[in-house]
Length: 158
Image (tube, rainbow, N blue to C red):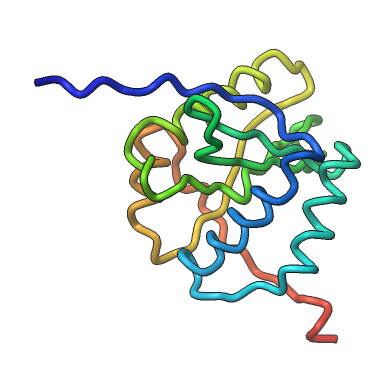
């Protein structure tokens, strides 16, 4: 018997969605990197994005009334390409809804927005190097390794 996929809707997050976004971000850190985040800091960070879209935007995926996934994107200006690159971040799908098209719906929604924005020249994301399941999902949607290694210097280091 064929599986009937639920209807997935995607919408921008609003300040009323703060708690679910904070919850998903904290769960994401535990699942993907084994990190317990400082919830008050995450809450302030989420609140800052929801209040200031120039920092980034969250999109939420729902099945019926239940929010089942999220994706954030931030903006980077590329002088080499004279346009914006949108970075996908904070991608999370509730475990009961994985492998059901939730991320695909979120990604296709953002792709459509990027295609309609003349100043957007590409989409990028970073993924934890050992998360082969996520990498395979991204590959199936047409995302490819970009040939870069992410390096960082966090403020706690200086």
